Length: 528
Image (cartoon, rainbow, N blue to C red; front, side, top):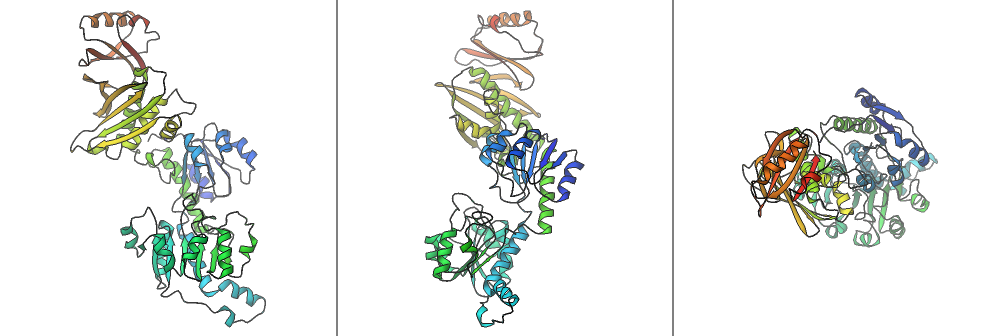
């Protein structure tokens, strides 16, 4: 990926001072304006290329659409549910978080709540402060030999598992993404939710909040659990259905809950908060000095690495860019965009594209189909979209305009690698085949015509098609010479269905191709 230009960054919340220092040391101007209202943020965001937030700032569609040059939204923490990622993606804005910044802090708080539930520590403390001595009232249970169910086996789930295993707990879990053999390597047996519910003495959740995880623990799942099961949520409010949790607490089906997060914050369901078997905190999962320092530093370093074209870490909506941070990838990205531009010019149709099919070939491109597809769509949509297409938003923009994108790869051992882009429009198919040769993106074929000399895809290009008659070529080149065109190169192709494509590299684009119309069947000019 080419370096992203970030000159000015707005920090809208209190983050560790190292965040500002790191950005400034790398030539980025930083403005700190904490506690802004939504209207103030909308007014301020217009002048910035980057925005750094924690969890309090709501980066809504209104905020994103008010931005003029915003390129990155950095969340100093894990979740990004306070950012409208879909709108940011359509605007071509990278959204990144710090996936490991508060891992240890959140895991330790989870473990602390599990222990608090097992021994009623907060309730016993409050009783003592009220000058009571109720030893029998706070009879607890050991964690040793109990079963802990962990929902979400990412970084935090792993850290919770290894810590609670030291208490002699059996750890089981559920995660649709982490392979079972991976979680097994750190002592967690994976199983379905239906198998997990009835085995757990304790359940902790460590998933993002999304439609598939909202209300993951609800009336139905509590019914399937052991009577007296204890639950802990230090992830996101809403993963546990609060109304269902309160009903389970009141019936005794749930024996206790440790809550650091709530559906609304501050919470409005005070009956749940005040329940005697609930231990709760005001969203303290990342509230340690170490986590705040780590998150502030991490988001700054991630932005700097992106700006310098070194790496892209923590991007939640631009995973396709992760493998583009090297010079070889840049050449292939240039190829994809250039072929998209060539096909756009040569199809010369005002009809919308129905389908775009990108096929990569060769072992070296096995992991490149994603960004080559985005690059080709960028070339096709440039100058034809209200939003400025880039690798982040190209595919969502294509989908929004009704274009079907198909991607495929063909393994060929030892092949140099090539990319075919096919565009289906108005009942016709236009094709371009390209590759990178000696670090130069080149066009090999156009609509079935194979160029005798690969066409370098850089600078100003003119393509024209004539019938396979050699007598026409001198006439065409004469018209071009009369127009004062200075050629950089000239490449002819083999005939295709009686027609032959030619490509000319020129010093400056022609303003008017009307003089060519009597001589050629098709002509197109473009800059790549």
